[in-house]
Length: 238
Image (cartoon, rainbow, N blue to C red; front, side, top):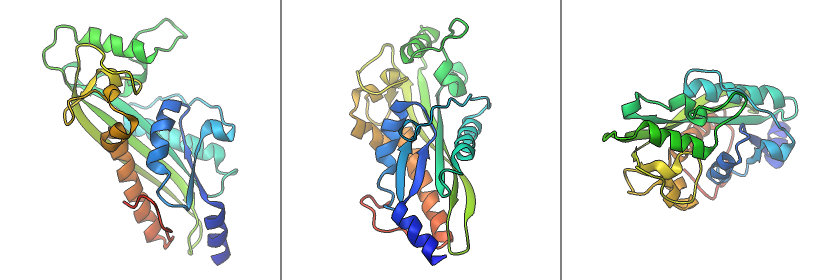
């Protein structure tokens, strides 16, 4: 088993980002790349995978687990030791009883066979809130991890979820040019800026997705420690 651990450390364990959304990949990658040299982060398109997983669950947790499990099952033979990491994110608006929530990516009504753009969804949200004074909202991300890892006791499987929440409000009109999704209309309470008015570094320091990643990394490190899997030096210890 010592040889197994040495080979794994040399070859690295793959963290597969279980999303085809390249905007999410751009946010997630810098948050994950410095966990440990033991891991290497891959987007699906970088390993030749083009698959769309339909989000059929009623909760963010359900959809995140659905996607992580699907990508794990698809790639587990190709990557004997790997972690599939998926997220589902919802914008939950108080005056809309938590909508768009789990339907955030497909909130705007569209003709059959068409999917809304980021702009479609944001504009539909603003239209839905026309004349409403209470514009409080929160962004919530749930991350799901499903993995297969080596240990001195033998290979083991695990699943873990983590969430991150940021409170804010919905603006009267889009502000800023950066980001994606509802970023131009979500004003973060702690900064007084929309996500689209922030740089990537600013957003990643405080965002709901960043908070969920931090919790997921802490949980992963606990799992590794519990199975006596050493982490070598990291440039960004948590």
